[in-house]
Length: 181
Image 1 (cartoon, helix red, strand yellow):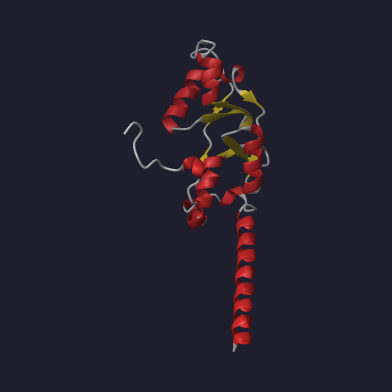
Image 2 (tube, rainbow, N blue to C red; image 1 turned 135 degrees about the vertical axis):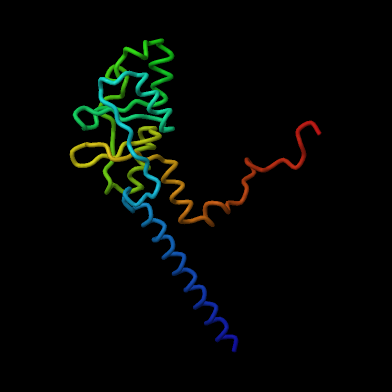
């Protein structure tokens, strides 16, 4: 009788290990999905190189986006971001009505294709410290923008238990009493 219980426990343990192993592969495969599967891809907002900085800022405000993609004859030529507004426009006090995007954009930015894996996109964003990255077609025509936030939101939607059930760490422990009380 004892031998049967031990055999059953061993079998249950084996099944649990196999499930954990299979789930680990499933989670890894999720990161190998192509960017096109993201339900939250943002449409690309594009302006020609000759557009003014004011045009870009107004387009970003209207669309509530953190950047515009700069195109030359429909192909990606550069990117102009909120960071550029701060570092190249405000800090240098340029005339936003006369300075063209080609003077302040980041030329020839890194980009992704719709078939690139999510893990590759995360890697590129991490290496380059990019927030959004342009997604282009084979002719480098902008299709969309992808952000780390969009990928993480997608992963959390797929794995809500894993994403929202982390135990608190000592560094993030919530104080029981208010400061000074």
